[in-house]
Length: 97
Image 1 (cartoon, helix red, strand yellow):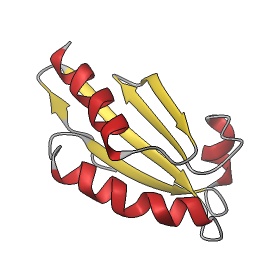
Image 2 (cartoon, one colour):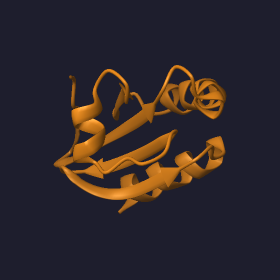
Image 3 (cartoon, helix red, strand yellow):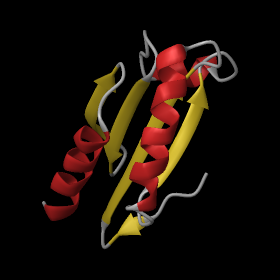
Image 4 (cartoon, helix red, strand yellow):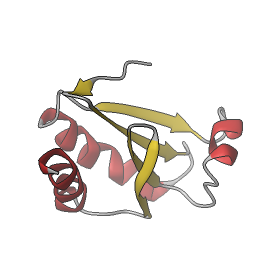
């Protein structure tokens, strides 16, 4: 897993999904667009059926769930399908803080 630091701030976006999940499939192109604008942020996709221990560690109860961490601490959690703008606003706020 590649984690990139922004100055001294480390931001990571974790997308929890399942292959059988319709909204997860709709989220994939949205997150691909978000990724293109943030090459300095780490994005990780976690399949809850294959990596259920990680999903349990983060108390993921529904998919899709996107968790944003800053320096290893959860600073944002989005359950369900959200807009591209929602994620961009959250990341821009963290980068400007």
